[in-house]
Length: 146
Image 1 (cartoon, rainbow, N blue to C red):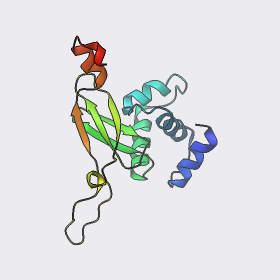
Image 2 (cartoon, rainbow, N blue to C red):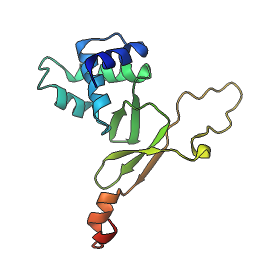
Image 3 (tube, one colour):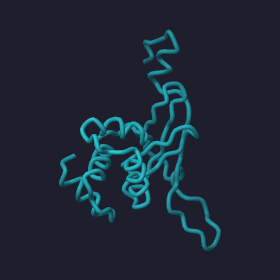
């Protein structure tokens, strides 16, 4: 994504842009791999030697608070982030650890349950765990199905 589009995205979400915030947001928008804060830091640090892990963590916290990104806690050991804030689910492959976007075509699946009076839903998270196609193919000798 070009820098002006990333700048516009941040301002639309009420985030005051800085070089570091632009870099983190641009990384999230370009890499649909649901990276962790450490992965983002490792990818950006060579080009930005003054970037600290604390800045990455603080930026991700701000982006999440402002609705520019979502924080995924599918696995209690790893927290990852997604710039796609549209209504979709996530699938964690318990073998390779990758996280995949799952589109919700069943309206009943993404409809919020009836909330008690006075409750307001701000975010819904649907997580699936299992084995991705690639890992399943590696596990079975019947690769013709893959």
